[in-house]
Image (cartoon, rainbow over all chains, first blue to last red; front, side, top):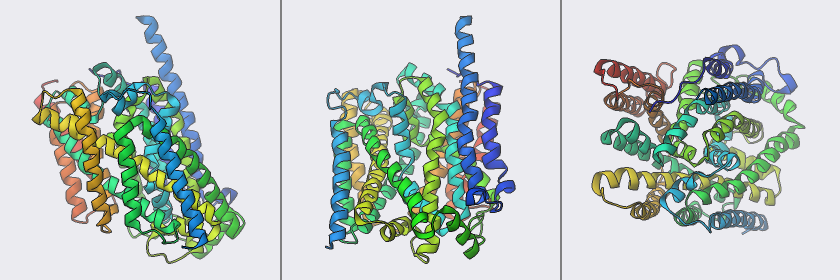
Length: 74
Length: 475
């Protein structure tokens, strides 16, 4: 009944956006500097919305490689 | 009625009519079995799943509510950008194994998962009751949203109540007739319109009034230096609140019964995984909605109801036909989620509560019939609540979020752990829902700066894990 546990590499890649967008809020919740005239906190989050799919694409590749490896073993 | 209102209304009516027609035409050739009606026969590809999930995540609350919060509360609204992007990160690990299990044993609802994984009817019924209870205020909120949109966009020529009655009649009709497939295709129309409207508003409003976003933000920082950081215009929504709320809501997004069930419509686990990778990008449109909300602080200060900020600014900035397009997109934005909620809640009531407890011999076709009747009943209940609504809607909604997140320990431990037991999940869920309700109803949210739902979720995890360890009876 249980699912196969995700790989450590995929979990670490997924942890990156959590650290960047959630746990470190005290470090980036400020107005200055204002890149492109946008407050820093808003700019930071917009950047990480674009970077999050890159992290998860990495996690996807890791999981897909594991699936393929496991298929060959059987 | 003024000429502007007439133009505006014609466009709203046409938009809703086209959206509804697309819903009716979709799946007109399909035979409506229970599985077809609820999970589209499990044959949706990446694009349709993307649109369906996007369609139900971006509701009236994000369209009017996000700009309303940016306007009335400032900095704390940033939690929305973080939690949506992170919710898809969480979904990457939860939905694919869930889909595999669901496909193997033919699950259609969230309650099915608990019934199959834990083999416990009481737990499945509890999940069902909590889920439906959390839905009612959410449906009610969407209907109220339609009322606000049509009233503002018609320059108050149409009252809220008739607008809500017509909208509910339409959505009950197409959910009744066509099920989930109709909803997915209406999402296509709605999303196209909404992306267009969002781009135009997010770029247009700062450009027309200030010459661009940079001068707009410079003016805002000058006039209200504290508005753009946390806690903004609120007394207690600081960084602890941000972290706990982002965790609570990003873990909770896919615990909503409809979002959970929508994953069963995918045609493979890989579809869901790829979807989780790209979905965060959709959150960018919300950043543009914030621009409009922030601009409204300078353009139309002092509105009593922040939820009206975006529409008021649009009415002051653009010609009436454009307000009509925004109103039409907004109305569909409320109708799509409302119909998904109706469909999910009706299926839960008929399939997971009525049949197992009262009529075990019912066939799938009879359940489908009963679920359709429940769509009508739930539609009427939510409409009456919306008509006689009070101002506590938002607090009810947040209570709902704190409620559904209490499913998370049972889901994630159920998927990945052998040792967790039905009794432990039941105890944890009761403790979590009870704590969340108590803290919110006694106005202790946030508790020492931490979101009450998050406190309840931590307690839930502790109880679920410790009861599992003590009972030592693997399921």
